[in-house]
Amino acid sequence: MVRPHVVILGAGCSKAAVPQGDANGMRLPLMDDFLDVVRPVKDALESAGVPIDGKNFEEIYSSLVTAGHSDVQNRVESLIFHYFKALSLPNEPTLYDHLLLSLREKDVVATFNWDPFLIQALKRNPPLSGRAPQFRFLHGNVMVGFCERDAIQGYAGTLCQHCSKPLSRSRLLYPVAEKDYETDTMIAASWKQLHLDLNHAFMVTVFGYGAPASDKAATSLMQEAQGNSIQNQLKLFEIIDVKTREKLLETWDPFIKNYKHNYKIYQDFYCSYIARHPRRTGEAYVDQYLNGTWICDNPVPRELSFTDLWKWTKPLLEAENLADP
Ligand SMILES: [Zn+2]
Image (cartoon, rainbow, N blue to C red; front, top):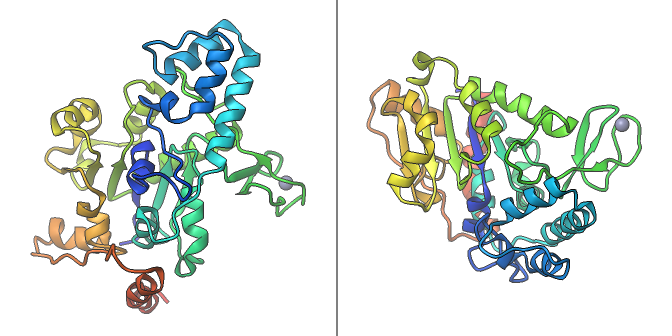
C-alpha cells in the first residue's frame, strides 16, 4: 500500500496522551476548560478587566480581536506560547510514541495542536530516523520555525538550510470563527498539502478534534478534499474521541455521510486500526475490506519500555526494507 493513512490530531489526543499532566504535572487544555487549565491567561484577562464569566476562550479571544484590545491580545498570545513551549512528554513511552512508531513514512500526521509532543516523540525514538510519517501543522506549533523567503520549515531555533538565517517562530493560529488559512505562508502550505494528502488517503483517522462546527474553514476544506463518493466507498474513516457516539455522529455527519458504512468510532486510541495494526494499516485494510480476509490483530505493546518497544518494532521495519529496498 503506497497511499497514505492520514491522521488528524486535536486537543483530545494530547489530553489522552498525558491524562495526569505532562512530565512536570502541567495539564493539557481542551477548548471548554482552557482558562481553568492555562491559568496565566485567565489571570491576565482578569487583571485587564476583561469579562470572562460563562464564556469559553474562543469567545473571549474573538471579542478581544473585534474590540481592538491589541495590548491584551498580545499579552494573551505570548502567555499561551510560553505555556505550550514549556510542556514536556513524561519519560516513559506515551501514546505519541506509540502513534509515531505505528505509522510509516508514506503516512501523514496533521495536527491542530500547539504543544511540542509530536516533535518530542519524533526526536526521542531512533527507529523513526528517516522513517517517520510526514507532519502538517494546521494551526502552527511552538517547536516549528519557518523561512518565509525560501518556504522552508524546520525546528524552531535552527537555521534555514538555504539562506542560513534563523527560522522565524511559527505563528500560532488562534480561535476565531472565520479563520483564514491563507494569510500565513507556513499554515497555508500545510493546508494545501493536507488537501492532496486527503485525496490520496485510503484511510482517515480523526483523533480528539472536537471543534469542526466552529471552525468553518477547516470543515469546508476537509469536505472539499473528500473527492467523489465512489472514491469514498473505498476509504475508511475513523474517529477516536471520548464523546458519545450520538454526539460524534451529529458533529461529523457532513463529513462521514459520503462514507456509507465505512466509518468506525472508538473511545480509546488502543482500539483503533493504527494501534491494532501498527505500520500495517494499509495491508490490513486491503485484506479485510478489499479481499474479505479474516485478519488478526498485532497490537502495539503499550506497557513496554523504550528499549523493548524498539526491539518489538525492529522486525516490522526490517520487513519493510525487504519489501521496498
Ligand atoms: Zn531561508
